[in-house]
Image (cartoon, rainbow, N blue to C red; front, side, top):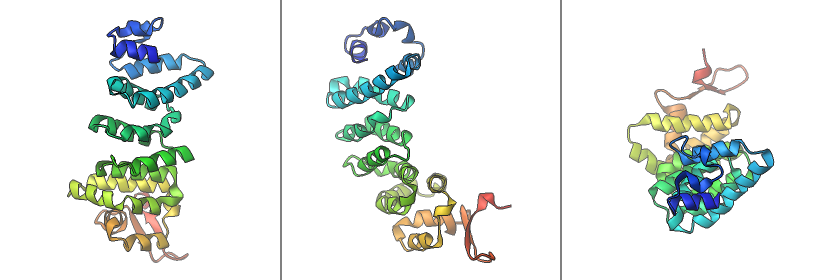
Length: 241
């Protein structure tokens, strides 16, 4: 893989850089997709070695700007084949990254989210990176809630300031904020939204955007049923008939 990428990008060998697998290359307009076609024809043990190789190559090429084109392909390839092996490397690529690479790293980390320690640790390192931008606050917040739904309040509070910046940039675009608010709700499940949590949420001015989208807006996603025989309950409006 390393020899093929170097021949393709640094030596202008085109598809022949991947000989004897050159017939896979150029089938699509995306080299990462062509590499996925090779990957899918490999036995399971070889696929595992390829995923590990992606991780090792990213660790090396992330420090070499002459191989930046290959880095972009490798990150896309990692997302396509669900290479969770790269989770520990992705945040390191953010240091000094330009906008295209930064965007790619964050979105790949979000795409590889799962309820594992590795995914959670990756997202936390993305969130705390000096290169992190408020533009990604909503995506990363939803992903953190997916990786650790029980800690959703902490994640919302940790990202409260960048989310406030993002909300100010969006202005009246409530559609985008609603997308993130619904994403959090889908990630954590209604059972985790209890009255005590909502009281804590309502008391945090920096999280007013979420409070509005969930309960206090004209088209809020939730409502509190105070007349329930079993006591006050939180209901999803989309599930009410």
